[in-house]
Image (cartoon, rainbow over all chains, first blue to last red; front, top):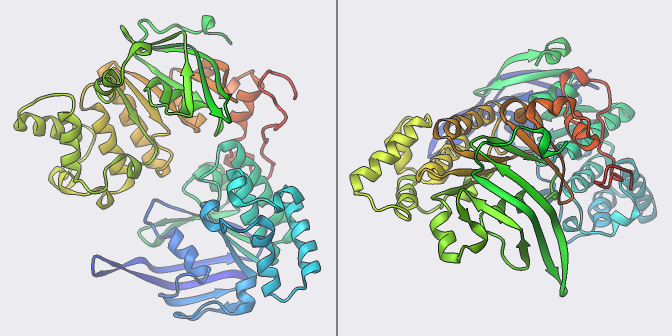
Length: 235
Length: 289
């Protein structure tokens, strides 16, 4: 089964009134359970591709299937897919509500999903422990946490809804190397224990080489080449 | 390793001894940087360490940029033959950008968003030197071309948001070099850039530093890049220099903190094995907390 299947994807972009393509006729297949890297220079289309997969950019043409479900251009993801596909952004500070406590940030999606509060609370506590935080962190606001702790909260929020596809947009590039190591270890642990598919965007080839089974190199909105594990070893 | 075992810079351009930085909080001084001493000659000296280790505070102290509630003391702070501890605010104004320059991580924060690149470069030059207009323009053009900025007229007329990050950082480098400083302090100058650009911009900085025989104090997270390009490395942890070595010794560092900083970097060869994570209990004294 493919977790991601993209055929002839084109994503337009209005640049000073002129239409041009950020992604031009891109094909990509990612088998379920794979950690797949997307790399390439700034403007190559890697983050745009990720936003299409997350349902955040709906202005595209082509064929996109996530977890065997087809997506329609111009439409948001269906509710079941919205739970199954989660995203972690580069800057955890910008992606967490500054006036909410960590507990509230984490519990809200679960309450929206229909869980009762005690159930949701138990899930939040378990998720915090899984990402290396604890009940003390639950009472804090994002500004009271370090950069690494904030990214752990963002990862906890993503995995709480038990996704099958996790999209990661430069998840460690705002972090120190030593903090990055802890987050990469955590992502490997979560992928192994939950059998998720991970799509990891990074401009850091060392991070891609360390994490991924395969990786696609994007250039000017197209996949220039796809590297397998042996080729990643030589990066 | 102590300074005594390292080749000493022939003529120190920048020299600091016993630097301490405090922040006043509720009437009490909170120590942030403790007894930092080092010298920089016509060479590249790198400062590495995690966020909060005091690297950037140390750099700002060198430039007289600490503002209350921060304050500093030192037994020596010299730029060549100038005693920086005796500088008045007016002296600092004449010195910064002329003899001692600072380059920051993100060109969007270093450039004025409402002035064209050409205008702000002329201003940077005009603050320190009175030159005829033609000479000013020629000097700017020569420098931008040396830094690989083609399409000169387009760059000079552009506003910062109209140029790429790599181009922006070349413009910032040009501005820091315009007045031929003796020492450049570069605080994470390449970490906002893509991999390939990162290497290019750092090589440009180093080439300029070499040909101008300047000193470079390079603050960076990227130990692999530093091992290839710097002469000496100072490792900071919790406000102290805990290790000093030559850059080629970094991969074989015996100090546990330096070794951990080096080893936690991911690579293809480490695929499938967990990365070492710095022990949060390590207290900077060489033993467990």
